[in-house]
Image 1 (cartoon, rainbow, N blue to C red):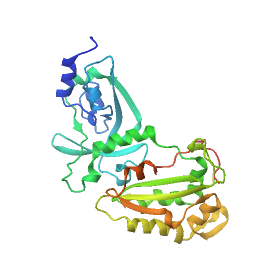
Image 2: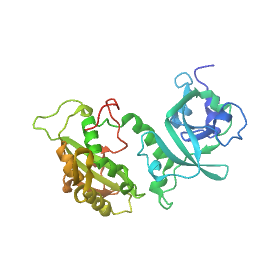
Image 3: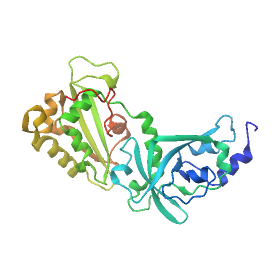
Image 4: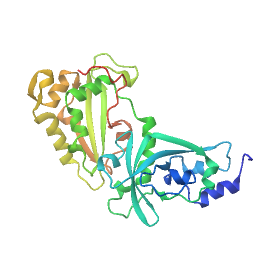
Length: 299
């Protein structure tokens, strides 16, 4: 095959393939699609790469595995989980839902797309005129979720351990912070040591200062979310039997282990108020990943 094939590239485009296109494993393999347990594949490659006429420069397409699910779970549809995402897709006059597993991927030769017909479903963004449009940007969320799997900042293990032992992690991962109106949780972590830390952020040891920014949807006032989080961290008294203490606040326990957080450090903005600088200077909170071995003992 020649390096450049305009006709083949046009065939891929005219068949409707783009980032977010969905195809069943059976159709990909040339089999009939009649199994409810079918594995599905979603195109992860950028659309411009699909349409590039140079098949030597861009020979393959990346696909990510998915499975059909009966409904979306809010905790998996916002892109906060680093490995699992729930998305909505449309096709054949119906709406379906998929659970996407970022750890299951494959690559196929790009010219195969021109030989297997049209995609069966598409992940698309809703119009800005649609009600709740911020939470239905399915393709944008899918693409951003993939990107964050490569760019997600590695938090220091000492910091992760303090979040766990102080039970602050339970709050950030729990129902309190699962409001459908919460766009994201952003952390500002700095060293509280007298000596300036100049090494890799993921290796920065305790003690730490922590500020938390809650970003809500455009039409939502985040004040109640801030109040709820502040109450959970500073006012609620929790049993800490594993460290021999009863009825302490989460912030008090965190401070014992080298993490200082104060009420003034819990703030909120909606996405219309939040600046790009605010977001870029913070770390979006997702499920905690430990840089070191998971077999290491907790505090």
